[in-house]
Amino acid sequence: MAKIVPRISINIKQLASVLVVQANSFLIALLSALVSELSWNFVPFLFWLFFLVMLVISHASLPSEDYWKLVFPHTPMPKAIRDLLQPKGLRSVDTSISVCNHQSHFNKAFQPTGEDAQDDSNGGSFFLETDLHPGKKMKLNLATTTNEAVFLPHQVAESIPFSSNKLSEILGRFSLKEKSAEAEVIKKAIEECEEPAMEGEAKYCAKSLDSLIEFSTSKLGSRNVNVLITNDVKPMTSQEYEFGVGMKKIADKAVSCHELYYPYAVFYCHALAKTRTYMIPLVGADGSKTKAVATCHLDTSAWHPKHVAFKVLNVKPGTVPVCHFIHSNDMVWIPK
Image (cartoon, rainbow, N blue to C red; front, top):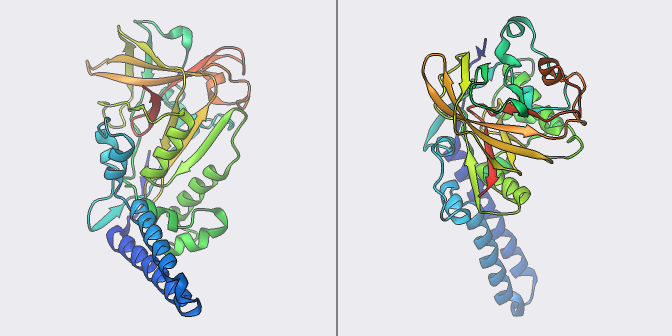
C-alpha cells in the first residue's frame, strides 16, 4: 500500500522569474565591466555578443509547450504529457512512498516483499514473446500511484542540484529534514539515476520536458517520433486481462521513460539494444477495454540472474525474449 507523506509546496513561477532576472542582471553587469575596461573599438562587438547571449537565454526559457511545437510541429502533445506541465502560480507537489516500479531496472534483483509478495500482479506484467496471441490471460495491475508532480521549466530544473553529494542542499531547498520519509524518497530517486548503465543500455534522468525530448530524439536519431502511453486503466486495481485480437508490433527501437517519486517531475529514461515494442488490446474481467504498450527484450544476458522476471517465467538469462507491459505513468518513444 502506498503511504502518503506531507506535501511540499514550491512557487514555480516565482522561482523561474527570480532565476531569469538574476541571469540577465549578471550579463548586464559583466558587459558593463568589460566596456569600462576595454577600448571603445570593442563596444559594437560586445553589444552583438550581448544580443546573441540574450537570444540563447530566450530560447532556453521557451515554455515547454512552445518548445514541443518547435521540435514536433506536426505532432500534437499527448494529454498525459500536457498534464505534467507546470501550472501558473503556487503548486503543491505530493511525495509518495510506494513500491517503486523496479521492473525496469534489469540489473537489480528486485523481489516483492511483505503484502506485495502476496499479490501475483507484482511480477505478473512479465511474459514471453511466444505468449503474444489472442486468448492469453494474465493478472495485471497496469496503474501506478502518482505523486501528482509536474515538470519545472527547463531553466529552473537545470539550476537545481540533483546529485547525492548535494543532498543536504536539495533538502534545504524544500525545507525537509534529513531523516524524514520525504528525504529518503528523494535520496533513493537520485541514487537510481546515478547508478551506472548496464551493458547495452543508455540511460538518463530527465528533469524537464525539454531534456526528456532531447534525450529521446537523440537516441532514436530522429525528431519524427510517436509517444505511446497505456491509457484507460482503473487506478490501482488488479484483475485478470485477456489478450484481444489486433495486437501488432509497432517498433524495433524505443526509449522508455519511467516516472520517479520526486517533488517535481523526473523521468528515468533508457534505451536498450535489441527490443521490440507491441500494442496489445486487453479486455478486463470486468469488461473494461484498453490498449497497453509492451516491450520485449531479445537479449537478457546482462540482466541480474535473480531478477523477478526469471523467477516468474521460469527461464534463465539470455535464453528467450522477455516482455513486460508499460504502466500508466510511463511512456515509450518510438520512431514513426
